[in-house]
Length: 72
Image 1 (spheres, helix red, strand yellow):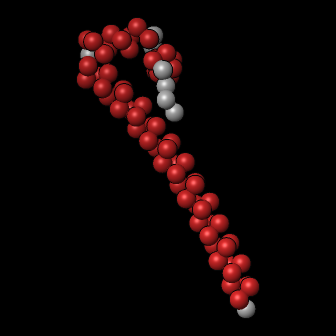
Image 2 (image 1 turned 30 degrees about the horizontal axis):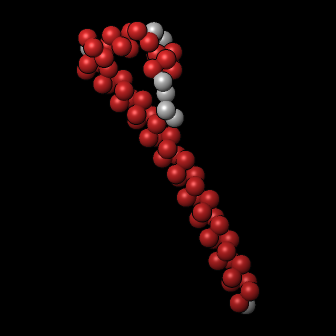
Image 3 (image 1 turned 60 degrees about the vertical axis):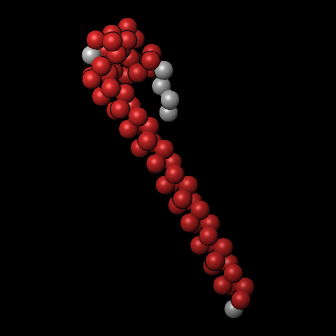
């Protein structure tokens, strides 16, 4: 999920101004925070991909079973 600065600030319990100040005054802290949000987004996307792959696997298995039954 893509968050706005306001969303991220709310999640962190700070103001959007604090995030802007971190970006300017504490770039290392800001980078860590942004990498944390990017990591969470990648985990979420990976979980979605895994779910889709499992559904695809089930569909292929069902099709294979159906083909086996027809050939017997």
